[in-house]
Image (cartoon, rainbow, N blue to C red; front, side, top):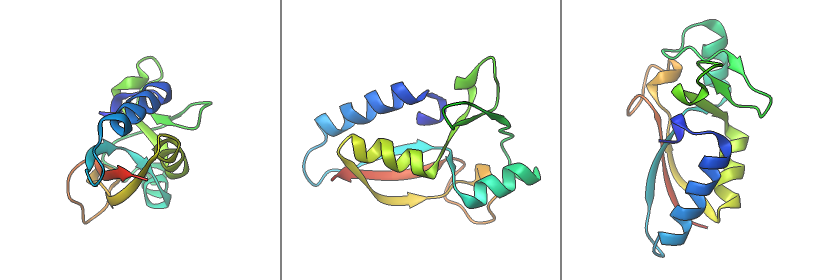
Length: 115
């Protein structure tokens, strides 16, 4: 659900995941991650999700009036929020939303573990 949450809410949920995650456990979460490929495809108009509203906090949204409709975070911000919560990315599967030819599912899927 991080594809529909503003940063403060994402950080709160990540801290809660860290609190309840057992050692050795994994949490599967979804984001729209703005990596180099996603940025290039969004800017070229080839991404399946049109994100063109850059906010002051660095995230990209589909709608200025309703940012929670779809929110993408820069890769650095995703790493920062996850690390700040005491978690780490164990696996990352890029989603098809960004116009990639090969993908697991529409959203980016991250497996998180205790850092």
